[in-house]
Image (cartoon, rainbow, N blue to C red; front, side):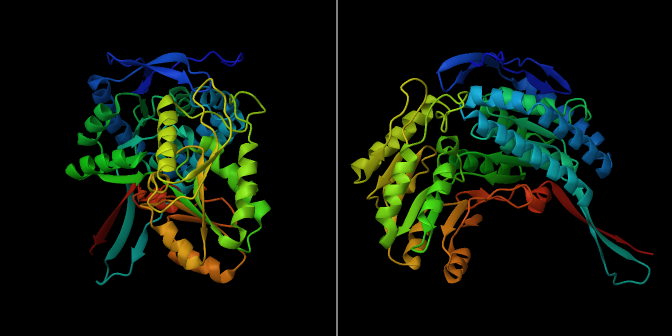
Length: 478
């Protein structure tokens, strides 16, 4: 543990008060770099959740009346606190999630930027006037907050993925109950605390609990009008079914298995440097991570040699050490899952090129797999770890066919200087976000969301704001 901070698991934020959960269960929070228990987290029980629901309705009734200009000002004050406490929040994140401290700082900064953008957008939630059909009448379209929101965020980017939901809901005038990941509670609580005292009680609340218990009680409640979930495909499917049962609107940002098309004219050195950094960020535990590399046959060997060499030169270790370039996986479950996926893929004919990794903690070696077939487990399943595949293609049509065979469609990447190739990939690659000769597929002002099994709906951008708004048509007659 860091010598500069004493880690303590947070409590719940319910009805404007930080207090301990009443559930009979407390779960350990583990440092994945050392496998040591940092503290134990007390969970919410049924009564805690019910109190949060009642408070969310009261918070919504008060917050929706606050003018957009004032909502913006309140959120900007919270963002300023986030930036003042960036190092503290980032240290908590590294201790409980494992990513290098530099990455944790960048995530906290990005989370602040997201909420800042949403705060500003609160002042630009416009309706419109429709030319009337009748003399003396007026037809208007208004945007109004949808109501109390139930939001569920995961452990891989707990600050950014929570901030997207918090920022959008609060900027739109909604109240929000955030059920954050039990693996990374303190960093999210520290971020949420930056807004404590700035909002009406019950407007922003934070729960930790048994996921199935919390989701069922929140979504089935008549208080909740909107659901937002980021996580795995199986859980997303389940929550979509539960939401449909109660006719609740839901936004789903699910898994990814991002293809990278590297054309023959690509700058190999630039592409490798950029993609190694992007692929192994957060130990590959990112839904938008570039994973399936489809490389033009004429440059395949050069690309593979360069990519493998650069990947295996990464320094793996404790995220609190400044020399560390890649930290551990978040928990022991991920280590077992990644190892199993690689083993099954090798048994199916793949060849694994692997580096070394520390023996203490939840580490997995950097792995590059070749000789993979379209039906290989590593192609069909999201690795969510430090694993990439390299496959050659003979034509751009061939590359697109291989890339689009995946059930996932979140992010994609292409490297080429050909305008024709860029146009074809932009038109035909089945993804929600595409980066061309770069890696920027997620920024606050642009929508982020997937197609196919990667979910539906968008977060960030005006589309993300729209997800928290109802549209009302009014017709005034003289």
